[in-house]
Image (cartoon, rainbow, N blue to C red):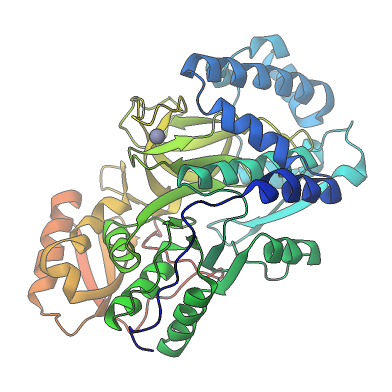
Length: 464
Ligand SMILES: [Zn+2]
């Protein structure tokens, strides 16, 4: 490929009226969903005052609790055993009266979580793979499907997206329509989406993708940050500057500072990071102020708890505990999906009333354990790879905590690597972990990906 590939321009004024007002409602009619109406609600509620959003959330919470007590055997028994009635949970602050729910709790007796008043034919089967690799199965209903899709679309709108805009998606199986029903494949096609698999990103494939993206001329590129960063590096290396989307949206992995800068430089646009967890209804996305992630409180209650179950203070790292306010088929109340993050207590300059998440600190499995038993977001250790000489000396890396006092750093060297780099990394690690911790270096050709081809930067093998 050469850099002389013609730059395609897009009209400045775009009309998405057909997609938003006709195609989306038509899609709802055919699929039996309610995405269009839910999106309209979310577009309004994002500008409500925080108190108004809180009232809305509490109202939905009260009706969910009432439903769970009346129709869901697990919750009926739980409330009885705790001596609680539904009226005891009137606001989100009352949720502390209930225990946190884990995937294991659900796995023990999934049938007890299914609401008795929901007809069998309305149950939609879902699966997700947790960090343990074990498949987790559950049910949702059409309302959950609709609000989930609408919340995702609103998160994209924070980046300037409008329904009908063309998107190129570079990701693994968690975002791409492989092995999905024909309906989803057709929806992908008609929602102006170019799917690009992030498996085997060799030079030939990257050239092909860049060419396809130039031809497709998308307004947005979306996908795993590690994959888009590889594509961005390839574009820079080969002088390809003909791809200028309005934004890049990253999700499903933790976005590093270097990845953000590389992607932004290659495609000359802003990068919008997004966080979601379908089984708990988590959703938090950056707006153009990049002042944190706006939490979709209309979708789920997001609590942030320390290891002992108490709420953390703003600015502190906590387990993200979710209460999906829409799934009446199989309600999960105070569900721990295994993600961690830091809540903020400021208001975003954009004017949206939605509260902010400061940063996502990764999966529980990405928190390392210190000799005193405390947990530290493993992502803090990645800062050393983002700056100075280290950033150019190392192509890719992964931190594995084998034991409390033993870390292995897997490294893919670049041609600018020198042994001094190890000392720099070791010094940085010791600063966070203490001097008693052994740091070993392991040089590899490639960092292995997960089954869905995600990049895991930190792996902690130490059990609680
Ligand atoms: Zn904002």
